[in-house]
Image (tube, rainbow, N blue to C red; front, side):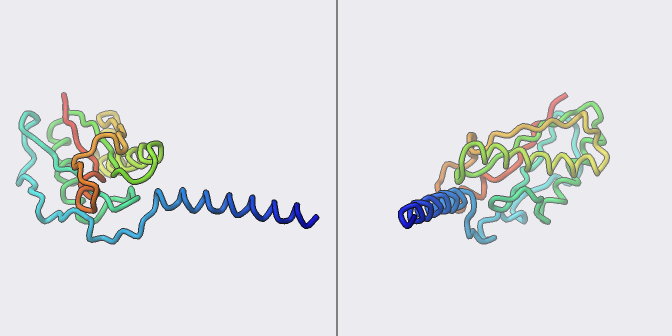
Length: 162
């Protein structure tokens, strides 16, 4: 009985170690200093016509899909543009940084794109005009393996079309 007890303890320890190891791949004690400074992002003064309009990316905190406060002015601008240009559609492309597994980051990118879509729908943009897709960590905007590069990769990009 004593040997079985040791094997059970060893098995439990192995499972706990695996879970903690997987958690370490997806969580980090990253601080907010990694966030992209939205004050450096230029937002056009007025919603433009569909041919010249380019929406600014929306950036996210590490392992989060909650829209940060500094992104709402940009999203309001995008919503106004889409309402002014009723024939235009948008594809929201969700991205993640390189940390974490491929499947996890694909799901995280999808949650980010869906969060932006939900906000635009609340602004009055028709759901049918918004498509979401996730690239996870597969299309980095910045190839650096550091906090600044990671911050630029945690984003949703806007692809406008008619």
